Amino acid sequence: MIIRNENPADYNKIHALVKSAFQTAELPPSGEEDFVLRLRAGSGYVPELAFVAETAVAASRSGGANKRSSPMARSSVGRIASLEEARSGSRNDSAPLIGHIMLTKTYITTAADKVEALLLAPLCVALEYRNKGIGAALIKHALQKAKEQDYKVVFLVGNPNYYKKFGFAPISSTNITYTMDYPPEVVQVCELEPGFLSNIIGSITIE
Ligand SMILES: CC(C)(COP(=O)(O)OP(=O)(O)OC[C@H]1O[C@@H](n2cnc3c(N)ncnc32)[C@H](O)[C@@H]1OP(=O)(O)O)[C@@H](O)C(=O)NCCC(=O)NCCS
Image 1: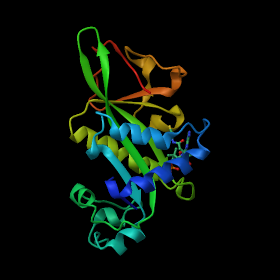
Image 2: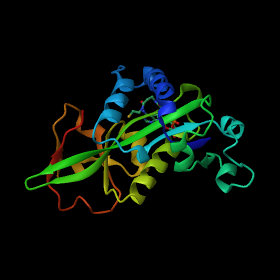
Image 3: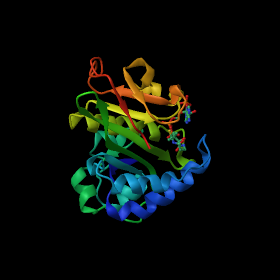
């Protein structure tokens, strides 16, 4: 399995993947595939933080990966493709996409300021590839890349039982409020810089 940045050649396949994957989500399908389009069209879109997972078989067909020489390739979750490979769209366009994740920019509004943050949404893995650690690999990869790009905090709406192992905690553990109509336990936050939120009082809006 390979994780790489999404590129325009993937967009149709991502749309189909997200639509199909969310048929099995806990909440009734709510057009997550179109949410992806809105996020991508918005000012908060960060191409460097939108990723797909694709199968290793496709990767070797594409000729982009030397699986034998890469330690990541020998691991259970595979290797990470370079941003250059992804941006150039040089990988095999017919490769099956099996997972997708996006982090987009959002803001905490405080009394005096706006503080940059990220929203993790949506995340999905193709039904036939679930429970193999692909969701976990996508989350860890996306959070690591966000950290490297100096982002400090990530919010999401999701099942706390799934996300707590990646460092997410209920937003109620902070001084950040939210304006959306979600139960408090599903609105979660992960500080990429520990303590970053300790002196911030504000609110976020998530679509
Ligand atoms: C949620 C999702 C991305 C997980 O992908 P995955 O690749 O199967 O996840 P992983 O293999 O990393 O993790 C599997 C583990 O997470 C658990 N898990 C999966 N979905 C979960 C959920 N919604 N709540 C709690 N735990 C969940 C599995 O039971 C499994 O537990 P185990 O490791 O103890 O056996 C995938 O199920 C999916 O695409 N679901 C539909 C879309 C969706 O709901 N996205 C999340 C929106 S917040």
